[in-house]
Image (cartoon, rainbow, N blue to C red; front, side, top):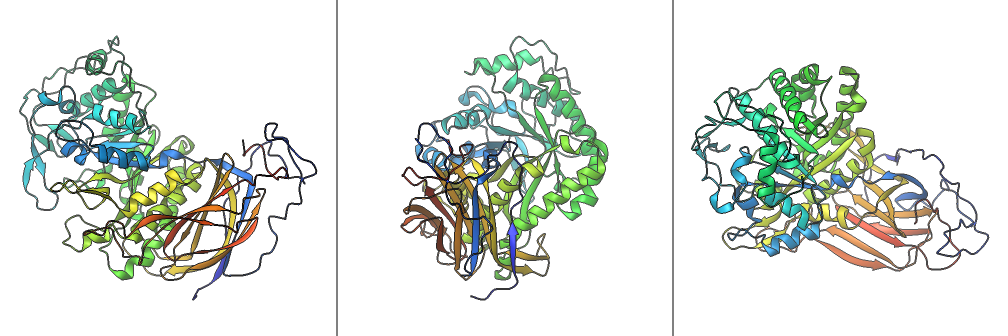
Length: 593
């Protein structure tokens, strides 16, 4: 194995008040009583034999709860939720099963700027509106009809066990050319009518969270359309079959407005954001309204700083998009993709620092990761670029990015994260749907998220990794230069009597033999292993080979407090260790209960 500089990478330590000290096992203990027992615990810093890399896990040192809301995904409303609904307006059973198995914790709702077109009887909803511009061809056409509206979105959340956990994207600067005309086209320019957009946002919050008895007036927009009262829209929700408010907490104003083809200045966007925020909170003061920012060096100077000069004293949350590497794919890009999670860490740290230097409210402002994942510049590139969006490389990167966010959630005040598109025919969807054949299959980014939702615990525990590193000495898109990025990333957690070790091997060609030492947890010798991998980093599940990349399950029989495991190149591995079933134990009741 050819490696570069060796270094130790240590996870940040959190101090927990009242944490019991590790003590030595002297007596037997009953499972029911969970009394503290004493044993000969090896020092957490004890030296290990050098066999390539090492990880030390301290199960007695909890670092806080895992933020499960980082495990989100995105449903686009047009096209029956991108194929989630069948033509009979029922959830497709195959699609629903795949989503339930994935277990996303929260779903973003977007691409439906005129929300009122998507409520009520599906058979009576308005036809598709004119005014949509194809971003690749520039041709004008029609928006899709809204068979999949906000109530269908909420029903999907309930069906997958994530009831009422939604991020709703307000379509800014989308508005009707004339809100009094039922057949009006949609416009999206710097001159879109602000009063209409704001009143619609108020009506939407009222529909989701309002009380039918609330007489708060929304008002009449500049076109003369009367948006009635909060109670009017809340009653419509009741009439549509949902008496109780949904209680949606998270909202964002616009999506990547800094890239809008009709340039909108950060000052104008900031001014408009404050109008939206004030109006929406008149309906429900408890909601969090996010403003879009760009987590890049360019974004800091061109967008973020002037925007924060306007909204800093008032904003609830910022909504960055973590898309990397913003470069057309070629093989030389692979190390940059493997290091992109480190770049995202740097970008979020810089964004928090910018907040600290521009407003005295930095600690009150959270981050909503509205979208995150791979991005190769443009959706308009010809094949074979679409295949590059779905390689094993992307799955490993997605899992790696999630790991960084899980570890840094408290440091960066992260509310939630939305990974990729959930389902549909586009090449960036976790679940691919072929509109012609009805076939569905899972892509590597689906499995990457599933490793976190199905095979990780509830409470982070401390670990320290010693491994070799690699460099990205040049800039590739928005990644690099980066130096001394570890080949291994380790994430450890507990739930019940199970210790989870999730390891990512970023090396493009080499397996890494790793010595594992565990303090404060005595595992059974048999342990379940789950591995996301494939023949090559450019392997995909496209073109008929839908199981080239899967999560493979296996078992080891030599697990102990000191054992060795070989983590395959370009892989994500979870080892699930169960507490040994005997009366002499070393454990911390605070964690294992």
